[in-house]
Image (cartoon, rainbow, N blue to C red; front, side, top):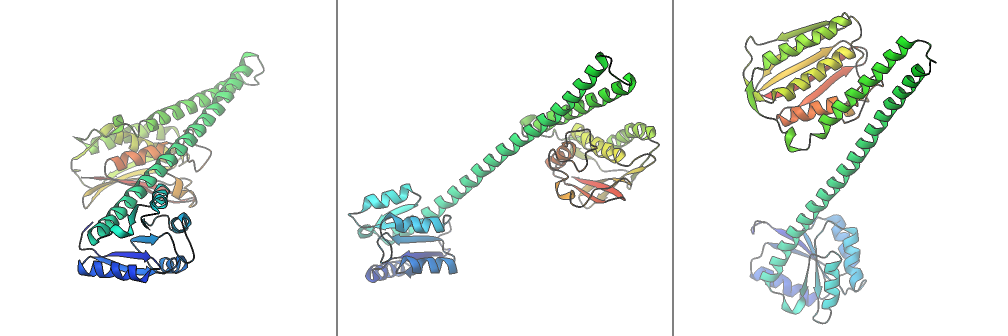
Length: 364
């Protein structure tokens, strides 16, 4: 902490001579500590509610509170505020107990000098910051563990549904109870494909937080990658009489660095989704342009669109805006993480009944 920055301190003390002694000592040493005082715990609460302080220095014996309860009352109501406890020579055990319960420091009144007081105040503020950072990290770890458990539960549930359905269809065919073997085999194939999609997505998703998922940044021809994906997508489009167009605004796209395999997955996912939700004889377009320092790729369709209530969650893992998806709801989540790992961003604009536009940027 910069020694010149003013530190706002609330001294909770009912001994007016001690308060005057502290003020004079700080003034004489030209300390950056700006001191305000409160004579009672109630007055301290009123000041803390009305103003912002960097630290509280409090005696444990006040007219309206005594002992460890003085500290606990302040700490419970203002848990993020560092508190230094003042003690007399004969009640150090109370001060130590306060430290064990969350106080940042304790000082013995008869041993205080300006340097010790200021140093204790600064250390208390820094320790409190570190404690808050640690608490935030622990909360993040706990949240991530809950999310992972939820993801595994949802994945297991989806896989089980498909496995049970496949088993039922297989059994019906084997015991000769099928009304149409061809139809049941077609449904069985669909369930197997659903399982395959979910397993592929989940295996990819499980790699996101480990080293092997870090992009291998190499210069590559983005135009060639896009044209190759469009060529493959046109085969799928032809099966539903769909039209697929590609427009690259610049005659020659600038070279970019990135992981071509990862970015191929992003394009493949966006094109597959666009074709899937466009319906028969629909139109899907891919447009590429350069804006400032970014390469921008847009995948547009004139399909069913996405209801506005789903848009905030569309890139969340396992989230599905419709029940028609064959995958595990991981494709868009994976795509976003890949784009962000490359320093870009992925977003969507959509209107029900009019289609969707998924766009992402890559830095040049």
